[in-house]
Image 1 (cartoon, each protein chain N blue to C red):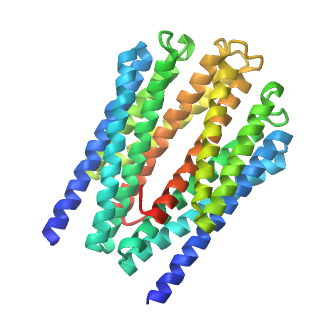
Image 2 (cartoon, rainbow over the protein chains, first blue to last red):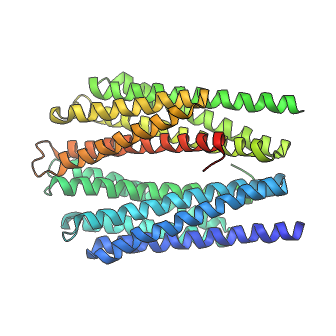
Image 3 (spheres, chains in turn orange, purple):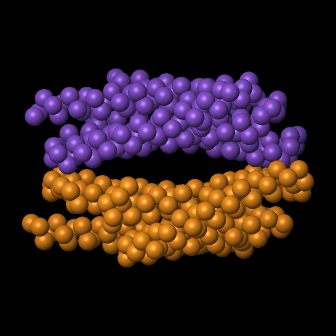
Length: 212
Length: 212
């Protein structure tokens, strides 16, 4: 029995990595769709989010089934409860990547981002991609140095989020209201993406060290 | 043992209701702070969110402890896993109430909402309050007619969210960029609030009927 359970826990870990990889692909493609005004790419990100949602439902059911069948205690219980939560966090990161792609789609054929804030939005996208890359690596390796790096990426995303407010509210916004709305949303999506990355990082840290 | 466990499950249910009541108070007060440009009220909502976060941490720990100690199966397991998730959803609803209050605070002493969209924002606030009221009632009674009503409130919030985009992007936004940013955020916060209410409604429906 124990061997089967161990195999199931290992499978769960692999599925979380696979889910994080899909999120990583999605956030990178969404940023590219935004930067290059690429409608088919935006639409593919939006369509592919369903696969991430399906993975979440599947992982979720299996965690609950294992809780019921294996009656795990101590570490195993912690791994399963963390698995439930990490899957749900990754699902929300996938939603945010989809939301970025939806902004690109809504604005098409216009670029969503006005020229004078392109660099800001590109930096947000790059930071979010780093968070996603590192989330994959952290789930695969449980290397806590990667968790630290995610926290730093998130600090940068918070700074860029604040900078977006400064750009919007500095009193001289040269763009349209639509562009103000879109930058507000994009900055919020990327900032939340970072927060969710940190949430995964802290759960893994807790699993590894036992300290919350 | 069973009696103690039943008492603990009942306590868990009561604590979820108490948490939902705090969320209800918070979203109502945040809407009032926004409508009346009331800085102390906005600040009290922001400060009180810590209590909701603390309740969530406490509920969460107790659910995991009960999972470990009681090794529940079937219905009990479903109740505990749902409890974990509902607490975390309520915590996010509390965060959104805080975010609404933060918009009121950031704009003070100016009103955050320009006059021509006051009615729209007031309607959003009222719908979100209804969602919160009903969430309290649903958790206390498990009356599925209340769950249906939450889904309808959320449909209305989605319509109001769409209407906010129309107001912002109709080509004749008469407000400032700051007001466009704030309306974008407020509409998004209220819309998410409704989504989370629906998430609680569906979890309770699943607990009651066994159908997801």
